[in-house]
Length: 173
Ligand SMILES: [Zn+2]
Image 1 (cartoon, rainbow, N blue to C red):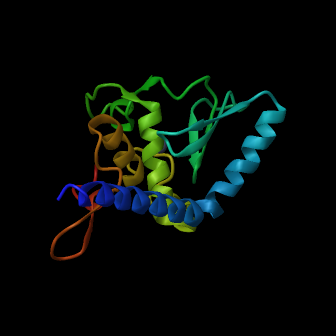
Image 2: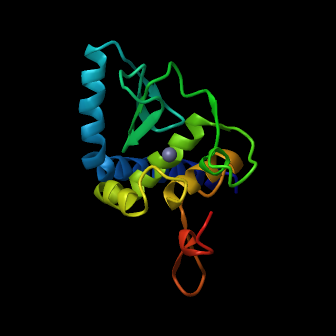
């Protein structure tokens, strides 16, 4: 009876790759502007590499007046040398919580996953949820994913009763 296990594992691997391909295609309208910005960055000294764990093409050393990282679909634009750096969560930075440092790569990977689910809706939803802010449930979920390794999707789906917006609970996170 051992013949079915490898076949099942192969099917699961194929399913994951298929899901990844669909997510990349669905996120491509968001990825494209990131890719164009990254290519301009290359002309100005940025360097690109494939972030396999992040499921993204990473452009490091991006010239920008702001420091940090920006995820657009399957592209991460970063002003530093590497995403393998520690950073504060939004809540910690705002003084609303005393949280340990997180890895920037883990935070940005959560945004890649979110973009592969939301596709072309990612940017409108991100802006409607508050943009670059610790009150944005997408940012809070990315911090949670980076800190705890889970929960990159901000809206938990209940067994009964549909989706619930965590960002709507209690207000002032
Ligand atoms: Zn973020």
